[in-house]
Length: 112
Image (tube, rainbow, N blue to C red; front, side, top):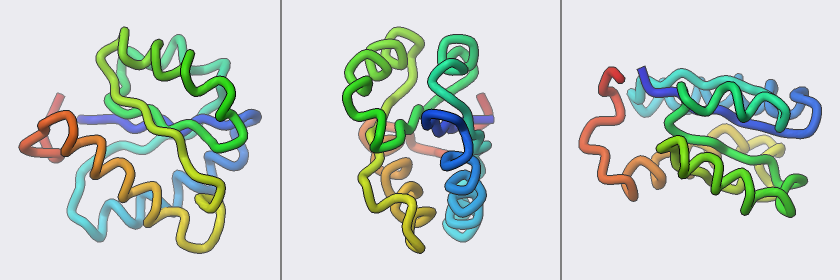
């Protein structure tokens, strides 16, 4: 199953966002596993990740993280500063949907 990894500095912000995002993806009938983590987790978790979402406070590190993601065959997206607001789950789900479409995924529900 396709995995989305959301990373932030300590993991707390990404954990709350992951919960809201799971709900938004279910409402869109997208069958994706959404996990939260920290920057320190990225190296060991990218092999099983299809999409890496990076918290806005890590914008300076985004280029390097996107490079790691690309090397592992994953897409990467930088989350906007508004993502931790009340509509953050929907906003993050929009970004995932766009990244899946850009990759040419015909079925985000595909098993992988």
